[in-house]
Length: 232
Image 1 (cartoon, one colour):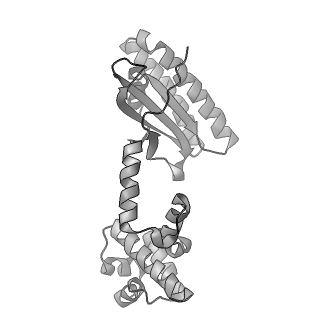
Image 2: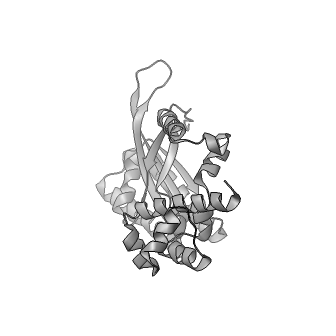
Image 3: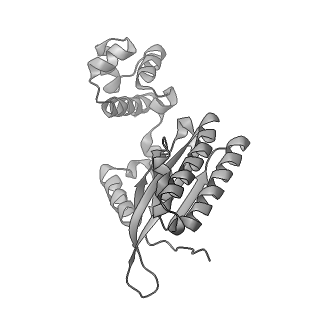
């Protein structure tokens, strides 16, 4: 297979994948891109298309031309240190199972109310991360981390009135983050924690991530049975 045919095959696979992620038919994609159904069919058969048609398809699918031209198997091959031809469905299925055995996936949701921040009073530990490079965002994120850490320290002493008051204050800091074009996402991981030779105990970890609005995090991957550092 020459380079042009190989690229057309990658584009075909990606267009089909992105279209199916939207639950679109070829007809719907053609309508959204304002091109003929025949053009979409040719692209998905690996027959290629002109730059204008590909730009229209990429725009309709809300992806870039580079997204259409990038072989996902190449990225996976680099990640796992194997040759692209080794990234087969069977290989991916095997790696998926291995990942499930080694890691937990914790879902995250963007904080939109003070109520959601009351979760801080019902957890045992917190992991906080700011992935923004803007200094102003990092400053406010540091303020939020410090405030939530303080709440974690006194969580067992707070009654309903104080819990509500502190959650509102924390949300005011979250709103400062939002005003700077970023968001705060949180999620709770509930699992059993083994300590030395004692019986496993229920454990709740809160994950907090500050990120630009267009890069909001929807999940974190947590290693199972990782060591835990206890604060004195």
